[in-house]
Length: 313
Image (tube, rainbow, N blue to C red):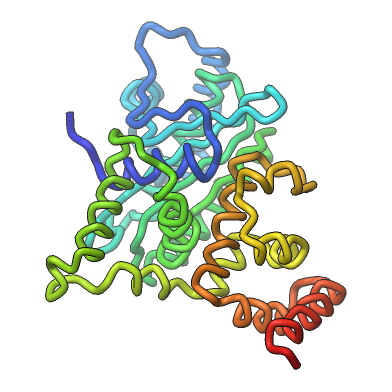
């Protein structure tokens, strides 16, 4: 069976970062299934063809639905109710290029996923994501605008799907870096991406191929402190600063944190905060928070007080 490294990365991301209890790659519907809203979905396809004639083009409704698949499908259970994450991932070393109709092809994939979720899972909400590590600037604006257009269209049809486009720097900060931060805690040999990353780090640590690769520890430390703070949340970092400074483990923090996050989200935030202290970047983090423009003044004041303690001013 062919294993795509991009799909493996998203599989691990859905499990360990998004907290999905059920995850499947290359999900396809069975031709034996009966849909929940077949007539309505077929009517919706015709509506799409009227509003966006270049997206579905001459594809029939049957072709669109039976030949479709979702690269990675995850289900999260918050309060007992299922919440769906459906991700299309594209990994092209030269950048995402589907030809002149790149934006339309991205939109087609996302719309088709939306139809599949409604048809087979009877849900009108969830996150539908297109993720790719590299997009050329000339395509980025077109894709972003097209996704906004289909998001508005689906909202007008009574759906609450959240369409996301994660590319370029966002792909690194929102997908790759969080995975790297939790990689030490994951030992599942079936997760190809994380195993590959561990192998890379092991080789760098032993310096067996130091002439060919940069030192892995330096690579990790090069992640900007501001990116780590955004992953944690600046207010969250300040609120629990003294716990992080003491080195309280993420597991112990679960009983301390009062915010309504999932346990997985709490652990990830704490692991990233502990990393800041482990790499002795707390002073830089506090300085960044004192200069931030989008956080409450009382948080900045607390950061300034903590900064004085750290620098003994």
